[in-house]
Length: 518
Image 1: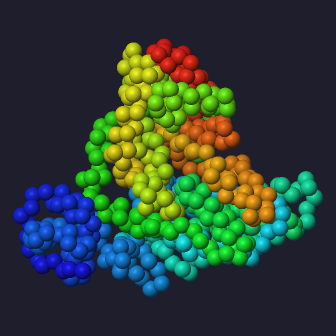
Image 2 (image 1 turned 30 degrees about the vertical axis):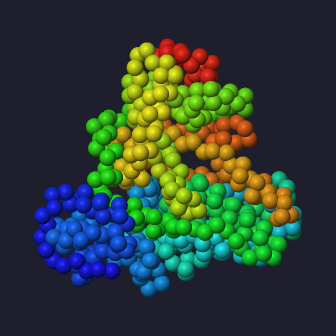
Image 3 (image 1 turned 120 degrees about the horizontal axis):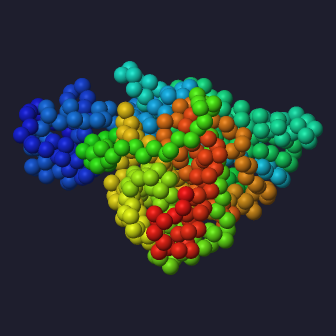
């Protein structure tokens, strides 16, 4: 560690200088004695050191992260038995969204499995506890600092234990409803981000050979990829313990709170590219269709749509022939529909990525997923193939300009971030193979929680969001929409058009998009 002497800076571009240092792996922070830094051995030149000395008084106000880091690479601050650090931008966005509702946690990043056969409950408990020790996110609460801003606190006292609930004997007609009620209660019983567990593992014992296993997390500490990773690790650890082997899982290279602190220490200049680029673009509104008699409704709802196996197979073939991916092909058809449905010539589409931007993050559990912003323009005589080129270029550029949710975490949120968004969830075949590992001597099947976990009603000031999920060779989709603007019938019609536009693109790729009927 090094202390930087007092002095005045003669550097013109201080933010560029900070970015230059951070690109070398240099960490800057403030403590009671002034500006300090840590640098990998040999990376700082004599010129760098002199520039730091001269810039001391001017750099300090620009630093976003003021906490002194403990030993190692973590930017988290040691406080008694807990470590505290800043929220990531995705977490901040989620925090503001929850405050617009009832402010309570909701563990709706959840999965449930029906287990049939001999289950060693003691070993499952050990597997869950091992996952809790591996991942800081599972031992996290969100507290409010003295400066009234939310921060995340990681502590070993927030143990990740398996809760076991024995269901009493019930008639078959009541068993399903009772189980659904218990699952709903387990997922929705949190009431305070600072006190309630944000991760919960519950085992419902139906009888000696039948159990239901639930893993549930609040979105502020997890995303869907993290849920799949957690499921894989718990079942893998259980299978290893069952064979009397030590738990052997891939190393977690970076914990999510450390990743969040690293993001918050990035240069604002680098993060604000998307905001500067799209700030002047107005929000693209769907045409409202809600009858006056239904005005005043709150919360959100969704309608489902399905893309058959035959159509999915055709989509894969089309993507191969045109040297693109299935995701970009589907995004092209969906972009065409959005532009036509909203009667505009350009739109910025938030597209959800899994946030695993490096190999270092592959085993990290946390809220890593974030939107990239894909700007798509449609000219009058564009065909679907023309639009594919536009979407591909815009998608790649959006990834290059990723802001890790900086744009959505700003208050007030920029209007372009509220546009119709897209989320693509890939097939879960690898995870299903782990869950049904023959070494566990269990029959395991997933339980659909979509009708069990009912999200609390909240204001939903965004355009409709489309979610595509690859399952069993088909694609299941849903369109989530605000109930205070749209009717179910209107959204069902929109969802039907998704399949129609996709089919038209596959069958007649040279058709002009503007000729598509609505």
